[in-house]
Image 1 (tube, rainbow, N blue to C red):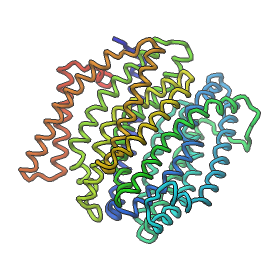
Image 2: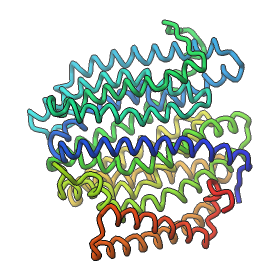
Image 3: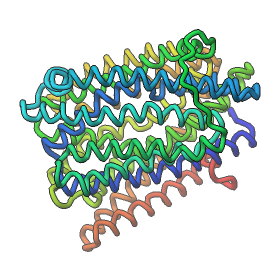
Image 4: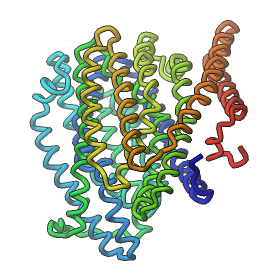
Length: 513
């Protein structure tokens, strides 16, 4: 059995719980946002245009200042902090922030000018002319938030470099609040363009909440670019493959939107909402573990502690599997009534619920793959290998698009979601195979044994929840009460089954397990 030290486990568990709790708050804020939007707009052509308008700005943000820059900037920034050279650290932070803002501004200006053509030919060729024009108008507004995010993301990475996780995590909580403001007070006058203005407000809040933390750590800024500086060049060298990696991911999402625009009205929005629902457990489990584990992975790799890296990765993967499998099953069993309770009111009718659930159930099949990908890719980054994940991401994108074209005919927009799940699962399996060769072992047999036990426990949980939901329907319970009782009882059944089946990985959080 591959184990990590008790001290390292406590450190990871404490920070995972902290970041995970903040992400839960962000998810609650996101659900509140969606409830407001659902009541006013339902699932239809207007929201199709709104969500389609974000695809290219999101790609732009990812290429310039998203997760790619974080994984390239933090190791170099942390090196200065470890050497107690804060002046050099803040100088590097200033230069990278300035570069990110300037590049984003230049690219955003080009996209804004070309927005009508991009909307018609690249993003959503299936839209009618009026809807394509609306998509272009919204895109131009959203680009303002992209510029703000390019600065805000860097400030979050700076705080991560100081091992401060709370405020960057809370930034995800306040962002949806800006969109809620847009939905309640601006959308009645400006329609979906009011939602886009709300996104700009949310982006400003996303940056503002980090200011106290930056001041606490002695924030300094210079109007410099330092093109000849070795540290800036090191960040740029590490950045290249990671930019392409995340760029491929967002291009795949863009291709999915392109295909969905050719289906019925509401298909783009249904995919977006199904993806958003799947992202709740993915973020709370996968992203939280990935963010917290990455500095530990990097430290172990830098020390050449292959055994420690192997043990930390293996136990982290087994832990997220023990959480993600039941979460995926719960989404499939309870997804339809959950969506109805949350959103089915006003313009969001039963047909909208069915459309979103058609996407959610297929996205849920890839949840385990997505949460494992958060850890597996960071194991490569910790070893300063950003090329291998890029190559696998490109191959996965090709498989995703091919499967999407094949499955959209018989399954509609649900086929696009299924294509994503199949592709990401295959990507993770191949990456794990490569890591197994490099690290000599990743505890594959232990993972398979755990997966079998977790699947049995999840099946028992699914049966218990399905029986309760059926009983509640016959007994006239309210939908919310039925969901709450079914979810709680299912959780108890799962934990009890895991205890009987000796799923030790839950001891990561329950010390006496």
